[in-house]
Length: 221
Image (cartoon, rainbow, N blue to C red; front, side, top):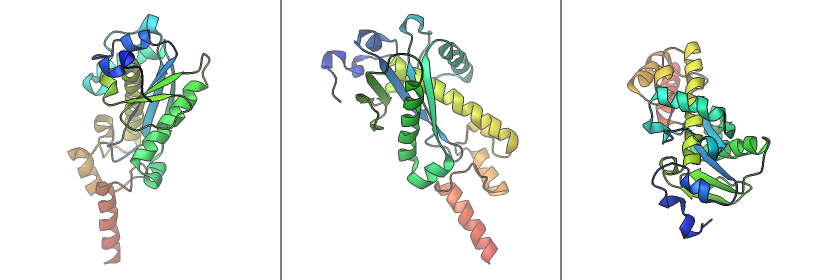
């Protein structure tokens, strides 16, 4: 979808809500987290902001401290309409991480649409891939640093997923998931080497696949 150039989200240099306030309609912002990790689901969030209660400090979740993200998560969940969506490890391995990310966003949008209130008339999606939503959609590269609604979605999705991975760390403490959220850090790779693959690892990802192949060769030798 091409928006009126006068209202292009690319003109918004910071996620201050200016674009959302100037748009005549209901905007849903969407973002996902967890495309790069070796373990855990990919998680998405869809958000409709309350522009009268916009918390200060909205930004790309990757540029915020964990403490700031947690504070914004609490503030946002008290005021915004939102929905979460996930695609499981099995789905990631079956359809690839890109398609799983788009699936998670469709699920997040559906969860948002099921909340009480007007339906979105425009979806702003971080990145350059249209997930196929039931309303007009604008993809915005690096949108989590440009638009408040996408920034809010990125914060909610990241905190949601980080907390999930911290919970899984209690069951599988050898991989540092409470610190790395499943990303391929040195500690995570060492854990894979020493303790093997868990049910939460993405078997289609090269480091995990390589460990499985090595285990198969060792068993057959």
